[in-house]
Amino acid sequence: MTANAAKLLIEHYVDNFRRLPWRSPPGEPAADPYHVWLSEVMLQQTTVATVKPRFERFVQRWPNVDALAAANDEDILQEWAGLGYYARARNLIACAREIARRGRFPTTATQLRELPGIGAYTSAAIAAIAFGENAAAVDTNVARVIARLNRLKRPAPGEVERLVLEMMPEDRPGDFVQAMMDLGATVCRPKPRCPECPLRGDCAAFACGQAENFPERAVRAARPHRQGIVYWIERAGAVWLVRRPARGLLGGMVALPGSEWSDAKTLPVNAIASVRHVFSHFTLDLAVVSHAEPEGEGWWQPLDAIGTAGLPTLYGKVVAAVLASDSRLAA
Ligand code: SF4
Image 1 (cartoon, rainbow, N blue to C red):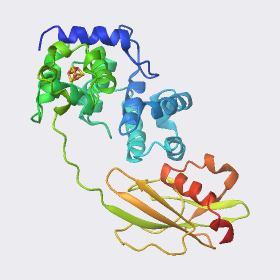
Image 2: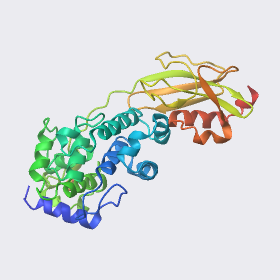
Image 3: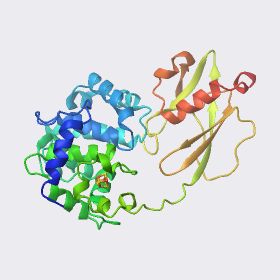
């Protein structure tokens, strides 16, 4: 790889960077660490298009980390509803409170990593973008670009980080990290657009005409199946909602009452609706059955205000399926 590669990459970034509400344009003062942190947590497993409006609402409601730390858990979880991976929201709350307790954001990747929910990638991204540290922020996109540039099928642990640091210009770590992220997201995609790429003269995988074959794709294990029952308890235009236990999947989120989820293979035949939802590590089939009496501690949520209840996507799907079903009225 030529020493010119980083320069070409940053020039391309200056001309093509994605304007995102948590970013500073290239060459301008660094972005607010609160914005970088919040966006990076939201972007874990969620697309940029989904995150953009949610990020804007979040910072409008809680403009800084102290305001977020002082908010109550239920309001934050409700604002997070629909973004999925709710452990992130619980870590976000714990992290905001720890930063508020310390009085300011830690400024190095090593210190940032001590905070709840901040791993190697997020700590390096915040340190490089907000604080100008030469830290290697390696997500899936960046790992793919580096593997192709260096024609690596299965990079050894730590090898990608080392190669990122070798390529990173000391005076512009923030722009470099964001340029790599943008290149991986828009040009060096799983199906690469090499003719548009500023690095094609430096790319070993392109040179051998096999860009798409690098890195080697991991074989995914089959996703297991689980099943469960949800109770639809409706009275006078309202439905009975509960809050899930604080720990575990969807912990602390608003939900419809129901059974535990298990590997059992039998669902009830009297279901008024059914829903399939794919989590990252299993597929869930829920059967919705009508129930007369309230189950567990909860409250009556008017159906015409169901959109403000803070239901996560899974239960939003259940409500939509029931409301679209004729059997609900017949039950
Ligand atoms: Fe990726 Fe192609 Fe650019 Fe190489 S030339 S970095 S494979 S887009």
